[in-house]
Length: 361
Figure 1: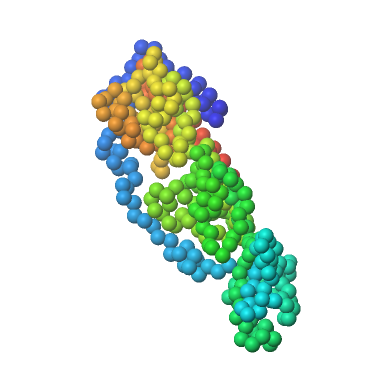
Figure 2: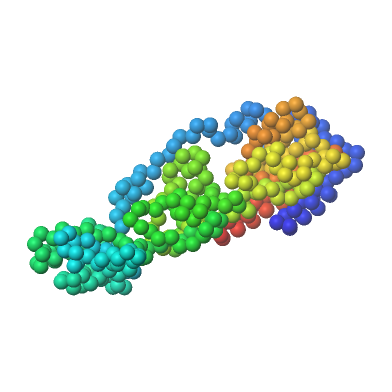
């Protein structure tokens, strides 16, 4: 990060030329025979912001796979689970609760090989079975000793299956999977919810050596139900911090640096405000630029902060991660030549950040 800011500061400093000013007419960018680099310059306007803005009423994206998985979910007993049985009219087969005994101390502990011992019928294999299956097995074997046995079986303590929630949550740790299906969103809630520094746009679920990245923010804000999954035993949920979700503010600004995107949101006006505002001695408010890594090269957005509608446009322009805001100086040379020096450095940093993100995944 320090290298990024230092490099840009050196490049920008080398572009200053006393006495030269920017011509803000439409032809200012190509005043000489210089061939500009590959970029798109877009002046901020209400029409442009409307095209960039997300739909006001996004369509909810269903998740039928999750719905089916939740509706058909049944807990399967595993080693270290504790089961309790109630046999009607046969209290001798029901371990007495006692006034001060915890439920897990009353029942049958499932052994490492998936068995329990039950009076009269001996060892019963319960591992990887559902509660209805266990009830049917015990009832059938117990019917040799008791006429028409009526019994119920429950899990007194869920100990065999867990998921791990780590990263930017309030109370990270291990959480038991129970007879109630646990989704990704519910797991984050069990961990106390995401912290203020969390990035919900790229929550990672690790399962069997593979990673699945999900945008939980889109689930909350846009109703994208496809960004939720049913968790399984040994899943690891990682909520990263929002350090990647930040913008860089440079140039004639009071406090140049990195501005984090709280909850993934930030507009241009907030970016400048969080950086202390314009440098009153050097800044040219008519030349505020935002560099963005577009699909077909760099997109450069130009805001004339001296125009009457500038504040409204700045508050409506949503920033994206790794955007670079540059406030030009009143003594800066022609902007086309400035871009030719700054843009390659910004693009190389975007590529480096992309490589780092892939390594993390």
